[in-house]
Image: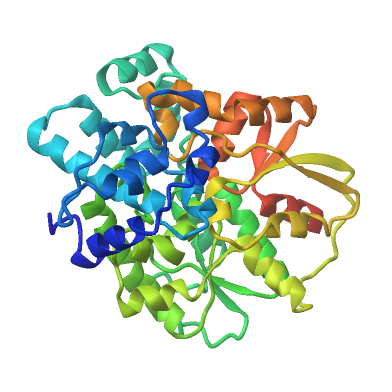
Length: 428
């Protein structure tokens, strides 16, 4: 199993499992447990079961496939047990066994397909009008559900033919596409922007808003070469591909981090991968991984730090609006507080209400799977109902799959925090 697990990762799993005192706080906080009997809880399939496993291997219970991977169990554990990390590694073992025993299982192919989100975006974007038309046809969706197990009701985003990077280099002709971080001259106010797959292929407007807000605050924005962060592969058990993508990103980002250039990330999940999951989940404990992690900032975190330093422009126009805000699970795992709410509070006239709901249910690709769609909807129902009850026509969330799910299930448009800031700055 050395192609999936490093000895350090296995040892870390064993050691952290021994810290569990079976207090059940993780099970109480789990958003999946209350809505289905298919998942006995993160403690049972994670640290409790790990104690009975061969120390050199993982022998997971198949019920852990219903763990959504939201990470709340790890966040709330008072003893620092890496519950989600244990379960995610065990999912990778389930995938390895399925490949060996049932290589033509439709779920295996489905999970592999969903893991290569970057490739899907590239192919779909090339023929975006046709792809969007086809994906909107009910017979096509029903066929996908029958053949691959991708639920026909899942919230698929629209493909974009016009890519974010193409827009950036067209509007910033002096920016070097493949040069070193030093190209274009030194700048004490330079930031590297890791935009991720969603911005590149589905939501270029989010990237445009982030660039506009950063430039309004005096930063020179550079776009490093980059690829998918690897999270879709990782969450679907494909550690081999996820680790390959991670190493590629680290090679591309390390030169910027080495020069002390902040790396800002708009997607909460992508940022979490770069900050911690490459090391904690994929077992990549290289100097590059540590260097890059130390320079990565969530975009809201970065802007709030600028405000605390007295450097953030606060020339916001008045916005008479009431907006519901959803804090995604992965944003909570950053452990940086609520910088988005802090930033939005600077806009005069704007009232923002954080929704008292834990999870929207989608958790990346989890809610796209037919056998899990109803579970995901049940998890997110309290959030959808609260947003609907607010009578708002616009909501805010900083995770892309959460945005798509909320928009589809609650019937409101959902935007990134920085898009609201850009509007208040008069940049859109």
